Length: 180
Image 1 (cartoon, rainbow, N blue to C red):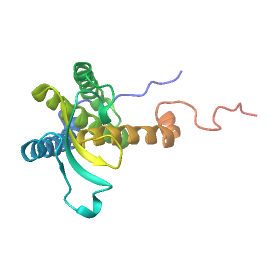
Image 2: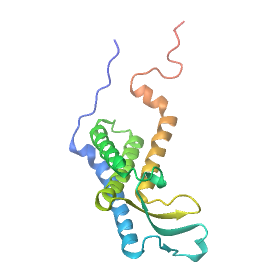
Image 3: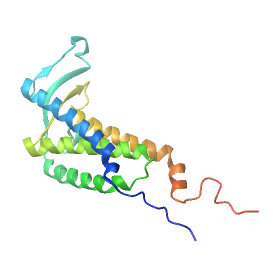
Image 4: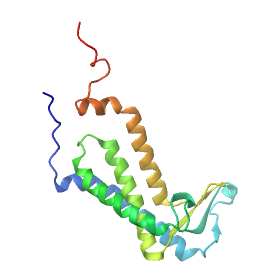
């Protein structure tokens, strides 16, 4: 009879890394967006170093869609989606294995980014974007955080699959062969 893996006990300490990482991202995201709104008119560009002008600049831009300007005018849908994702992360986070740091980091990054952009949608009706590199769509700290969170999650799924299967009772490579 196969035993089911036990879940770690849920306590408030489980949320410490989630709150610290996502809270830091939200703070940095909101501080930078507030600086842009206070110092640059909509559409205005600022280049702190002229040598970077063709490659990177700060531009005050507004986005009513998803990250990197996709799906414009769908802000309401993305606000609801952000609330649902945040709720799922808050529910699922303390149920992760304590040593599953990559998934914890990924979820913290995604939560910080989702809530950072949600704050903008609720306060301003759009998200403030300001980082412009080359011809890539304009983005912000929250967008970068969501993207990095997804990348960490994908890399963990690709490179730690065997460890994850062993932790959940699945046979490791070669263990599923019949004994002679």
